[in-house]
Image 1 (cartoon, one colour):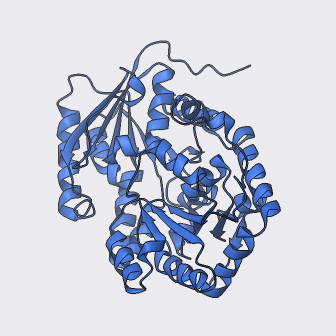
Image 2 (cartoon, helix red, strand yellow; image 1 turned 90 degrees about the vertical axis):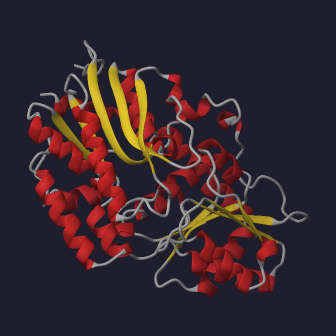
Length: 401
């Protein structure tokens, strides 16, 4: 018998997100899915300095509540995080009627949800862990932060009703810490949402190669947040090596982040600025269009604990538009790289070897076409939000038992 997911009566859901809702595609996908199934959603989140409050998907059942403005550089400070927790808790307490479910995104959204549940024990609490947060803090900061967030997660776990993760390996590790019902929801694209965008004709995208490259520059794209542990230093060194052999290459960095200025200074030092294009952060569909219009994509995520445990969104975005790509051979990413026969980059990162692999791929249209076709087919047939969203609804049914 097929499960029924549509709510018979309106359910009040509060999501807590220490980030900008309008720039987080995972949270948007989940909110839209729940709204379409009868839930009333309010997302308590941050406002970036350039953001304008907007209704997601023009759905009145989704309320976007930006409770504080935070500059990107200050977002990772303890002071900013504590302020968000206090404001989020007060925002919840001001509500006349307690919500049915609080959906906390990542460990940064969990403490105010737990404090509220202590006050109102009947409220169900879903913890949606986008990454293995304590390990990420250890990679980016140090062991002290790792221990602090590990302890915080352990204390908060006592109040969790249902746990959602973003990779099988992540949930395997979290199972040792949080003994609650678990659901793995991959960060895969929402094809229905993308197909509705008039400015991006997804269904008529051709497989790569787009056209013969004899008379045009080969465009190499690296998209996403420009942060440490993502191999941007190595990417620049690879560009230097490629340009020593062939000047007919252009390198696109699509995204913003706290390491962007370092990248620009390094490129300036090597005197190759005229071979690089910087777009800054762009809307999701613009990102997809830019990626599609390049020739080769790359991801040089470093060999850290969190990178190995999680699956980069970049892999699914590259597959979505069918661009031939190279990616570091991280543990959780390996099955997807193997499925589409993407070019794997081993550790430690070897600049000469990576440059050679890019040059070989740029000159092999058969390999480009094979990766492109396999990638797009896999997204259409299996790795899409229509399939993954079923698990989100099942998680909500479990929480409401």
